[in-house]
Structures are given as structure tokens and as C-alpha cells.
Image 1 (cartoon, helix red, strand yellow):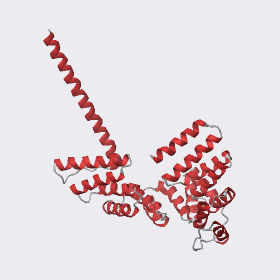
Image 2 (spheres, one colour):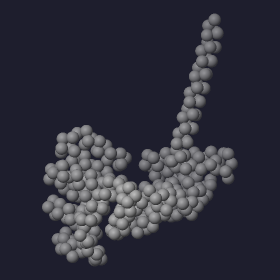
Image 3 (tube, one colour):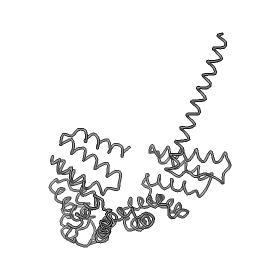
Image 4 (cartoon, helix red, strand yellow):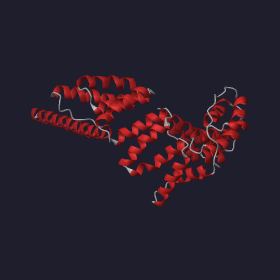
Length: 327
């Protein structure tokens, strides 16, 4: 009798183990499908079954390392993939992503060009290429790539309008914004951008001069050279709240698509405990942010403004957003 019960117990344990194994396999399969959809893991037709398995393992490992910020480790795994199968578009794409995250825009550009040589109309690769140019503040080339994206998907015209503004092509930006309005496709971000652009009163052409390191010289230079480069130097080097508030406010009028001037203005207002005004400025400027680090800085200042206003819930919410971007 006991023997029979033992046999039943062993059988049940085996069934339970098989069930767990099957469940784990199913979950891994679903996870693999999800990751593959996001990062385009290719099927390797030119590899042996063993080599294909190794390729997928290295590729998954690269994705895993990238997700936790180990970009160099990810690159090492991608190099192993490349040894198994050279000139693979997905591997090149991942190389480019990781090099950009390491701020190596030269190699990031090289690998995305290799990817696009094989899939020139891949919209995700083209969008990544735009990010590389934005990292270097090369708005002219970013606009060229964004126009290719727009040809594939006209819904991407909104970001093109913003790029025109970043590049100080204000007439082109407003013209595109007007077109989107006629098509009932104007977002709140572009509405605010147009208002800011129309407040500019023309502005003066960018006079190329050597930028001084002395704040007093810079302020005098800015009287005749209303360039963003000079203004940025003033805001970075000045520690006087009166100057920071004055020049950042003027910067919002002159360069309405440059988020840094909003950030300095909002930060200075926070320092003066003018939390409500600071919050309005920061919420207007964050729409133009394209850099994770600056976005985190905005969230920290927004959290500070909410704290000053006594809104603990929103303070924690934005502080966590900043932390998420830094991790």
C-alpha cells in the first residue's frame, strides 16, 4: 500500500516538474518573441544549427547587457555575433545603438550607415540616425534624414517642424506648422512653438565671432551678436541670479525651441521661490527636450517646484522620472 502511494507521489512530482519546465519554456518563448519584435532578431539561414543557437545566445546577451547599462559588454557580445555571421544588419544596428549610448558618435554613425546600406528605408534606423546627428547638434543633416522619414510616414512632420526651429529655420518651421494646422494635425507642442516663434520680432543674423570666457565681455558681445552660442556661454558661466533670469528670459524670446534657456529660467525662478511661475516655464520648455540628461534635469526642477508648492505627490512622481532616466 505504502509502495503504491510512493509511486503515485513520485509520478505526481514528475508531472509537476514537467509542468514547470513546460511553463518556463512557454514564458521564455513569449519573452523571446517580445524582444525579437523590438530589436529585430533575425533568423539565421546561413548558419548551422549549433552556430545559429550561439548567435541567438550572444544576441540576447547583448540586448540584456544593454538594458542594464553595460554597453561595452553588449558590444563584446555583438562582436561574437559578428564573428559567427558578418555583415548582419541587426548586429550593425545594435552596434550603433550601443556606441551612441557610450557617446561615441563616430562609430555610431559608421554602423548605422552600414545598416542603412542594406535597408535604406528602415524607419527605425533612420530615426536612430537622426538621434546621432542631434547628439552632435548637427541639425542640418538631421533635417535631411528626417525628410526621408517624412517621405515614408507623413505623421513625422511634427518633429521636422521642431528640427527647423532648432536649426533657426524659423520660416520653414512656421510654414510647416501652418500646413499641419490646415490638415487639423497641429499638436499643443507646435501651437506653443508657433506662438514663441512669432514673438521673436525677426532677430538678428548669427554673427560668427570668437566667444570670450569672461562674463562681462560676453554680455557686451551679446548686445551686437544675438547668437545662441554667446547666450549659452553667458548662462553657463554666470552665477548672478539677476543676469540668469534676464538673459534666459531674453533667450526664450530669441530661441524659443532651445530647451536650455527654459531650464535656466525655471531653475532661477525656483531659487527665488517663485515656484508657480517656474513650473509654467519648465512645463513649456520640456516639450523641446531631446536629450535624456536634460530631460532628467527638467524633471528635477519640476519636482522642486511642486515641493515648493506643497504638492508631495507630484514631487515624488517627477523625482522618480528623473531617477528612471539616470538609471
